[in-house]
Length: 233
Image (cartoon, rainbow, N blue to C red; front, side, top):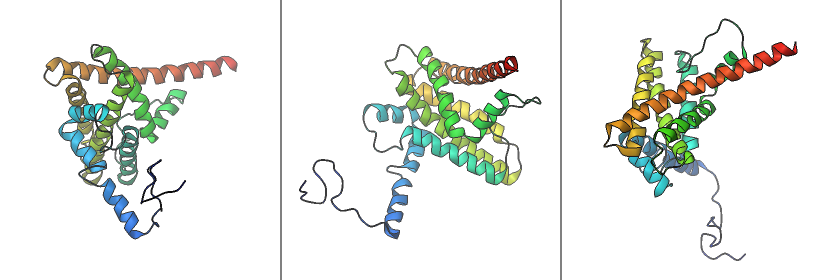
């Protein structure tokens, strides 16, 4: 295909790719760490007006925010890296069982892979959110997008508290966990109807019930796997 100008009129790609050099890397970093778009803009908007921001992302503009799945994976990775460097507590999901079991292994995997673990937890929270806010027109996947952003900010909050704990040895991570739940309830409630107190209350129950359901699900799956292996012995 013959191309005139700097970009292909068919696919929009540049006619000639620029060579990767120091300036290219600097531009890429700047584009990510940018208050007009990118990761810092996403964090700022989700901290100030989460409900409005996610509604706009779903219905109007999907270019300025970091993609939701990537956002939760990046924020969870930040938490995991800081936990490894600063050696603060095991995590905001902690399960102890003196007896080796499949459930123990599963929870350990979640603690070491928060990005994927949060996505799975988000599915359970989304189901309860959809149930409690059933009169609204948002589908399950749109609610899941909301939760990716909300839980991503939650991991940023935990990262900040965890880093502070690791540097000062003050046990503050539990307060970060409480703030995580408060923020999640506020953000979800604001997304649906920020003018009604009932929205925030339902958001709180959706989040907590989602976590409980997720944890019970892991325990049940672990128990069934252990039972199957025990019967097969």
